[in-house]
Image 1 (cartoon, rainbow, N blue to C red):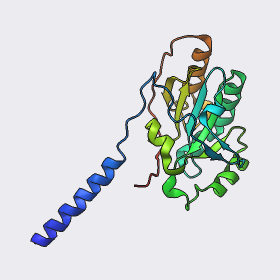
Image 2 (tube, one colour; image 1 turned 45 degrees about the horizontal axis):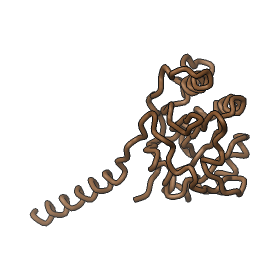
Image 3 (cartoon, rainbow, N blue to C red; image 1 turned 135 degrees about the vertical axis):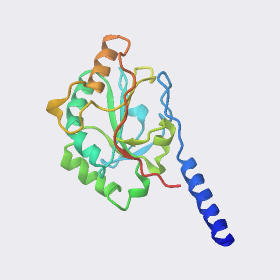
Image 4 (cartoon, one colour; image 1 turned 60 degrees about the vertical axis):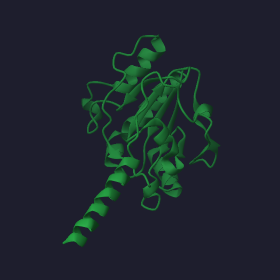
Length: 203
């Protein structure tokens, strides 16, 4: 019994250590975007950074992937959000941080196929070792971050209030945030709850 108790104690301590390794703090509103010069491989074959994608009025970052059902539910809105961002000189980029799923549908070859099938018109890059996700404190896919022209965080959270049905959306969180940002207003809702799959990190 003593050996069993010792074994269980060791296992539990390892689980606690593993969990604590993934306890990351999400960026606060007003924080400067981190790792803006960090290069990542895009599905086009280029290596690009957040700073290169950012435009005069800011940058929209979506932590996304190929395998999460929540991404699949919201993905039909990516195109509209991308068009709105482009029309307002806001760069847009999606990052795939699922390092533990690279051999389970979230590798670069899978990303290339996914971007082509979904008709992405924005960069979709591999966040190797989830370094950028860790720096942002991103926890889920999708997880959305909007920065202003000075690369200061003005909004973080979800895309809108209805993942299941675009036609039933009542609150267009990210579109409202971009509208208010462009018009120079203080954002009425800078934070919303991010809903999605946990990012598949590796220890």
